Image 1: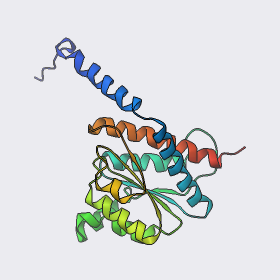
Image 2: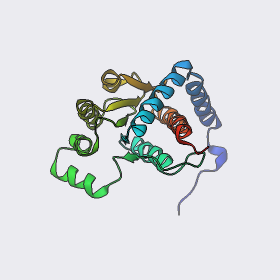
Image 3: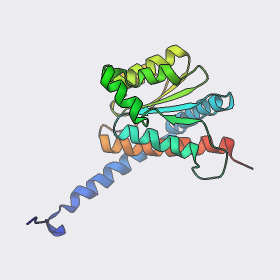
Image 4: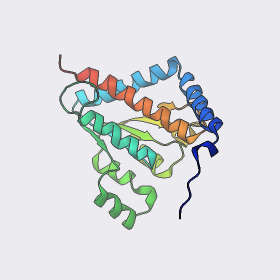
Length: 200
């Protein structure tokens, strides 16, 4: 028989501490956050208006963010408009598993970038640590193609922040708090992009 702990056995201070941590992370989002979101949205809007596309890429929870943000733009976020040309490079299971099977794992996104991304496009590279090798290689490939790249990371920014001219670094060293800030960045980004294409 499985015995579950009574809720009274839990430490309420643990969740209160998490709330305090989350509040501190969001409180640290200052005017520089607004500027980064505006600049990132401007890159994406320019790509779309010039016939380009937006690509999102990440691992694990960041892959979920990539899919989430792409879905908000292909569908709708807050208002009605035409669908936008946005893609997550994490969703084609046949391509992904073929690449992992036939090539080093570090190349799984790089090869997709080489296949799909073009000069007019914008790539959003998401990595909580900023040091994921397959993300860094994807960024390098996109930059060599002449595409715009926006980094989304945390902690000290890692190598990703060094590699990207434009990068949002979530103000936390804790992965869950970084990911929560990334979600807010993504929602804010989608809202500004959507407004540029909203039906009057």
